[in-house]
Image (cartoon, rainbow, N blue to C red; front, side):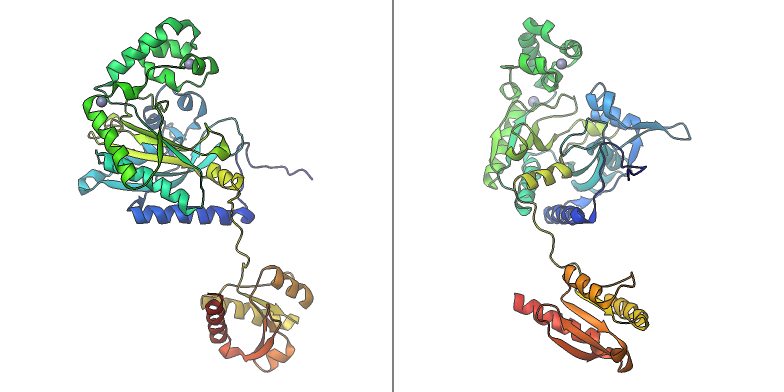
Length: 430
Ligand SMILES: [Zn+2]
Ligand SMILES: [Zn+2]
């Protein structure tokens, strides 16, 4: 039967067979953020459209073609979270987090919505893991942000990723770089797409960001921002490299990394993994010192990264590091041998759960044999049998599912008995 309703194109359901992977992954990210001193921030699923138009950049592909924009019943222009950084910086300004006198180190795990052509690991709703450090100007925080992601990959067991690092300069050195780019593109101007011909006048840096194949071709051998850094940008860039070396994070210098919008400055980086292809980025980030001011706040330096969770899971899978589901889903299975035992079975299950154990039972009025099969399938360590005999003597038969050994325990002592048996088993396994 074809179902009448399906998840919208480009979205997916995360079913229990795989959601344990997401949970494990998110727990690892929360843990590394905690150790690095980043606290969680949660912003709304939608924002004023204008925030993304400003924050992502007018004329960018995201803004012109990919946003989920709608008008609410009050006539407000709203957009589903199209990007991770702008909402966080908006919140930092709105709540005046800078007044707390510390660098704001924030992380989020949040869905991002973009109308893109669906492909492997890319969804119209995808989940982004990100951090933002707001209020720190120096190269030390840049190295820390990059190191955090490097250590995260280590924690989740992914090897073979490479960090690509560059600097895109600042408003001081950008004019000279723009001039060099104009000189380079001038003879090839008619080969560029219409957008880039306009960008040539307004912001030639963004030609370096264009995805049109002919333009990618035309920019072979284009000047590098790294060759046009002012003294301060050079010192900052050298500082980032020194710190990365000091904390043992390997990287490659890659001047092709571009951030074509004015509020980006200096450090820019990406992490790629061969399991997705050399140009397939699993994380991207950089410094956005001009963003807070552009969103109406005080000038505030900031840096952060975003990484797509679904893509990272795909990389782990392709690299054979998907991990395996925990074998046991329950500690205790309670089998009712007769209809009269069903109520005491549910009572016992809830009692054990309240005592901190994982307990489950049959809800489909199946026979004892089917219940025992289910107990084995769920990987229960013990099955508790409740039948006429047991009820009469106010007792429970405890079956060790591994050894098959059975013993009768008084109903009043069962919780204590299981907790101590569980401890013993835990000890022998260790
Ligand atoms: Zn500069
Ligand atoms: Zn172009």
